[in-house]
Length: 357
Image (tube, rainbow, N blue to C red; front, side, top):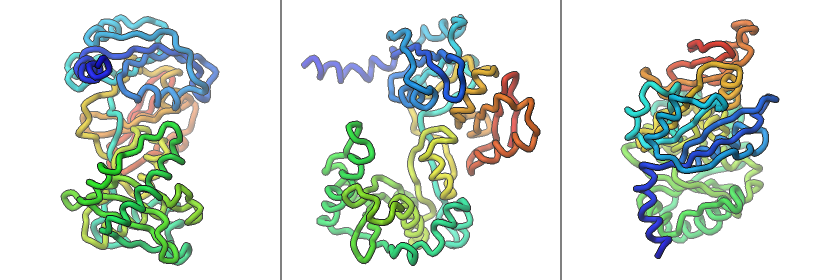
C-alpha cells in the first residue's frame, strides 16, 4: 500500500521538489577537479556524469530541494561550484529566465528526408556511409521484406527484439511487453532483413503523417555475426530505402542525447538526418554559471551540446586553447560538428565565447 501511494504522489511531488547532488571528480582530459551541482529527478544527471568524469565522482552532498529555492542558491552561487546543471519542469522557465547561460532538452529528434530520388537521398549520407552501402545488397547478400503475419511478429519479439536488448543492456535492460509491442505491430510495419531468404534482423515501425517512425529493432538471437556485424547498418539502409520506394517523405529515427559527439546521434547524422527540437519535452536542462573559463571550456570540449537559442538549435563547443590556434584549426573543429538543423555554433574558450557557422 505504501508503495502504491508513493507512486501516485511522486509525479505531483516532483513538480515542486528535486534531488540535488553535489559531486566532484576529474573532468575527462584534464587534471583539474570539477565540482558540479546536479538538480534532477530523471536519469539525465547520471548519464552526464558518466560522460564528463574520468572516473565516478565523489558525492559531497545529496538532498532534496524545493525548486523555487534553487533561484536563491544560483544567485548567491557558492564559490566552490564550477557548474550547475538543472533539469526542471518547463513551468519554471520564467522563474529562471536570465539566470542560465544555456538551455537544452534531455533529447533531440533526428529525421531523415526520404523524398526525391534515391541518388539524391544517398548524396546526403556521409562519405563513410556511402562507401559502406555501395553495392550493399550484392556485397552481403542481403534483402528485405515486410510481414503482416502475427506468427512472424512472435518470432521477431522472442528471437530478435528480446535477445538484442538483453545482450546490449544486460542487467539494465528495460524490455517492452509483448502486448505493447503487438499493438505497434498491428498498427505499423515489420520489416525483416534477410540473408539467403532467412530473416536475420527486423525493425518495427509505424507510419504517421507520411513518415516512417522507428520504434524497435532486433537481431536474430542478439548475434550480429549473422550478417557480418552490419545489422544496424542494414536496418537503417533498408528502412530508408523502403520509405523512399513507398513515397514516404521521411524516416523519424526518434530521440538521441543532445550531445554532438554522442555515438547514436553521430550515427543518425551520418545518414543525413536533420536535428530537430524535442517539442514534446516537459523539462528544460539549464546550465547555470557556464560563463567562459578554462574549466567550462573543457566541459564543453568533452560534452559539446545542442542548445536552444532565439534562432533555433545551435551547438556549444569548447576549445580551451583556441586563442593560440590558427583560425583554420578552429574551423576544422566546428566543421566536424556541422549538421542539418543547426543554425550555428558558440565556441567557448578560456576567456570568452565567439559565434561560428
